[in-house]
Length: 150
Image 1 (cartoon, rainbow, N blue to C red):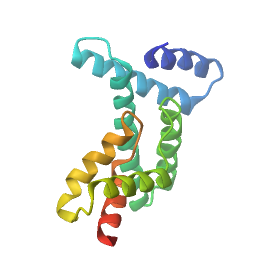
Image 2: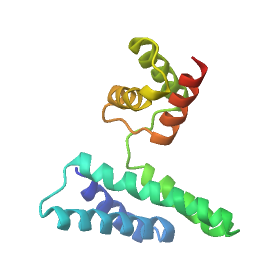
Image 3: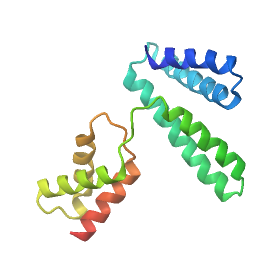
């Protein structure tokens, strides 16, 4: 079952159980997938569907930051709840410890890279994770920290 079909099935279930937040979030997810499908003029594969969800999560994280700065904590909480729902459709994210370990391993493989080599190190680290879900900001910070310390 594709993610689009799963979202549709879960929408029906959310309607039956009268789960307002879940239903509205699923509707946004379905609309985003549909818009991407229309833009592409073809059905989406799973990787493209996951990319749409990743974009939605990133947008919500940015919104949380802005709402928190503006003192609108109830809206920030709503965005955080939406992230939890969207993440339910994503593969498991890689944790910080694993990111740091991978960064250290890549730096060791490369010899002794400097800050000038940060782009290359980032590229190699991201390649190690393959299709797994990784936060680029966390990887970037880990690479900076390791390169500064070495």
